Length: 120
Image (cartoon, rainbow, N blue to C red; front, side, top):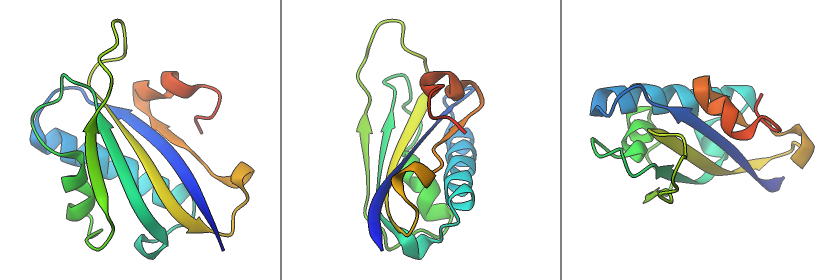
């Protein structure tokens, strides 16, 4: 079994804790489902949020999904002029038999524009 990384992102419609929890939950669920993963396959997850998001921690959505024994960390994304607003990004380290080319990166909604080259 190899260590792999899977990326993803979602743009929030508004800065509200319940909305963040819902949207990040959808993102994490899609990452798991599209890569045939369970919580046991997760090694760690990094979350970043753009500086305009203040209402909650993206990692709380993982805990609400039952991902309770995986190391999680949240950080602030760079504040780049013209960047897409209200975006939460995820970088999950996983154990998987998939080759690197078989990993499905998940960019939901408008966030698909961030990585048209790898968005599935």
